[in-house]
Length: 406
Image (cartoon, rainbow, N blue to C red; front, top):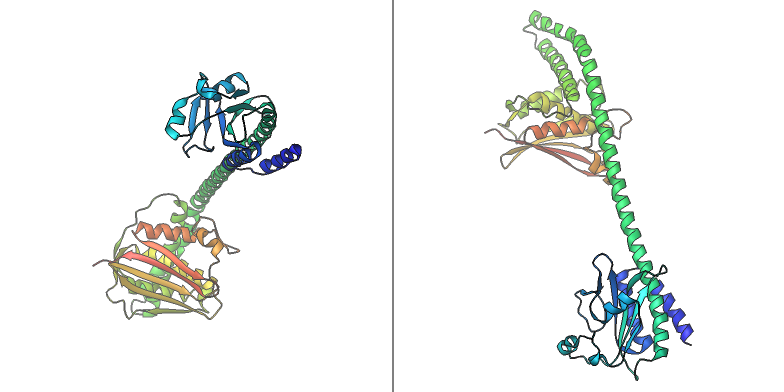
C-alpha cells in the first residue's frame, strides 16, 4: 500500500517542472503522506553556505535564510545526519523564539538531509508534529523515501531551469550574432556602393556634360516657351542625376543641404510636369488639388524634396494598376506643411511594414532598395518627418511633414 503511494508521489512530483510550484507540491504532499502538521523544504546555497526556504506550512512568503552552522536544519545539512527530536524544548539546537512569536507548539521534529545522485547536498527536508502520536522509526523510513523522491524532482527542476537559462543565453547570443552579421553586411554594402559610386561618378558626370549643350539652344530660342521649358527640364534632370550619385556615394554621411524659401505649390506642379515625361508614369493620372494651399512656403532644398516626391510617385505607380490615379495633396497643420502622396494600389503587407525603411530592402525585381531610406534621410535633414498608412487592396498614403516658412 505504501509502495503504491510512493510510486504515485514519484509520478506526481516528477511531472512538475517549475521549481517554485514543485516545492509547494512537495510540502502539500508531505503533510498528507506523513500525517504531520508542518513541513518545510530548505534548499542549499553552496556559494553562501546557507539554507533557504520560500515555501512551507507556517512560514511567510519571504525567503527564510539560515547559516549552515546554525539550528537543527543546519546541523543535519552539515553532518548528513537524520535527526529525530521528540523533546525539542530541551534540545540545545532548538530555537524557542520562533514558537513564541507564532504561537505554534513544536512537539517533535524530523530532519532529513537531501542529496542528489552524486551524494551532493541539495537541501534539508523537515517535518513537525506527527498528528497521531510521535515520530518513530517507521515514519523515518517513509520520510527518507519521500525525501529521496523529492530530491530527484528538485534536481530535475534545477536542471530544467538551468537548461532554460542556457537556451535563453544561446538565443540572445544567436540574435546578437545575427545583428552583428547584418551590420557587417550593411557596412560592406555601404562601402561597396560608395566605392562603386565614386568610381563611376566622374565618368557619368563627363557623359552628362554634353547635356549642358541645351544651354546653347536656350540662347538660340529665348522667346520660344516650349524650348525654354523642355531644356530646363533636361538641365534639372541632369542636376538630379548628379545629386543622386553624390547622395549614394555619401550614403552614410550626415549632410546639411543648402535650403531656401520655396513655394511648395510651384515645386509640386514642376514635379508633376517632369513626371509626365517619364515613360513609366505616362499611363497614370497625377492629380494635385492646390485650392487649399496658397502661400505654401518652406525652407527647403528644392532638388532634394523633388527627388523625394518623384520617388514616392514612382513607388505609387509600381503598386498600382495602369491608368489609375495618384493623388497629391498639400495641407497646413500647426505650423507645418503636410504633403500627401496617395495611390489606390495593392497596399503594403503587414509583415513588411516595419522593413520598408531598411537600406537594401526591396520587393521589386530591380532596384537597390535605397530609395525610401534616402527619402527618410532627406526629410529628417529638413527637420521633417515621413511616414505612411496602408491597407491591403485599398492603397497607400505617404505623408511628408515640413516646417512652414512664415
